[in-house]
Image (cartoon, rainbow, N blue to C red; front, side, top):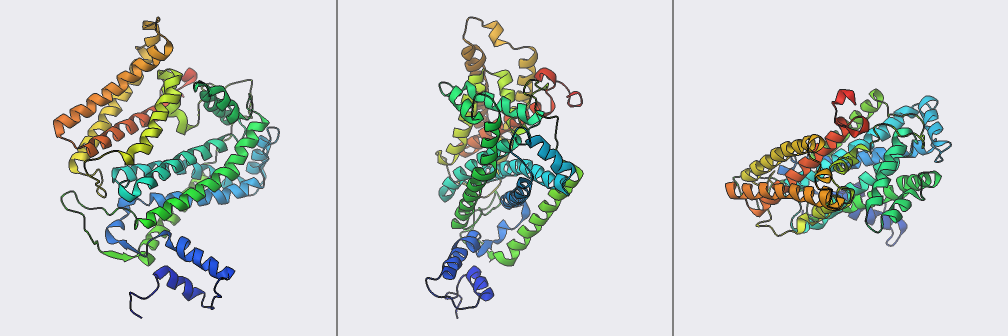
Length: 459
């Protein structure tokens, strides 16, 4: 049989394993069709040689899938012991840690996989952006990726409350309290998130249901759709050097075994790293939740600390609602902006793009540090402008100054380097991302009692 008439490789592999004739229309025939057209086709039969090096994608998409699998397996085991009620939740975690064989180890796997998943998905989004892998047929897949990142954060957030200790109780109290600043709908959103006016048994049941049922199903479904769309555009973007044109027909190799072996190796290394981390560093557990005594400092989960840090510098309407909403809308809009050219493949698009992004990130790093220090010890728009509403003196004015500085930086880069629109959008993304990371790091390591600035060893 000629190569043109032979079935695709996944189909041949499947049929070589199950050679029994299949009855047309039978249940087994339908299952084979699903496997042939969905499961085995999540990856192309052949992949470009240039996409094989680890440094092109760092295996971040596959790592995300492995971490989700670890979370599902460990989460199912935890459900056999955990009791979702305020009276028994904390005790069930203690029993899991102290009495159930390997209970603490399984909880550690779940804990570290969840935290690592947030980082890996975020890095995957950065890799996708900085290689331009959101143009053309990949536009909507970028939107799905952003939704997956938000879903991962939501999954971590709902699981954060389940131990019912002081740290988790007050972290959720802070984050759900932020919803109260949403104009008009704030009180309703807060009561909906808490399943009542206060955090209690109804809140725990709501979070437990979302964490163990609703969000996992949505994440798995969206991940499958995400991978399938990558398959539809024939895999990841093909990299090429800055001084060469992309190949119309790049040389390819078989997915099995060339890429499969690499992905399997990365999966084993990642799984081993999570297991070793879970053995060496147990998942934390504080004192039992005490609604009458707030810890000092009372911090949100680490992935929300950038927003909590904003709350220390801007009016709540801007810190909790307008700025985060603008960030999410901006992320979703990135593929649909009008660009000078749809460049995909090389990191940072061009040499000039790399330089402008690096400059924007360095300036944003320094400017954000200076802003935090000056606002902590010098600036006080509310006291200086007492006749203005807080939304203006502590919100509109400082936010306008911040975005004005960003606009000035981008205008200077465009004028001094002749950067294209692609490169300016990339520089803006680098600057905003860097600023948010600085705010997050400040909240994690440099905020002590009363959320005052301090050194990490004094926190």
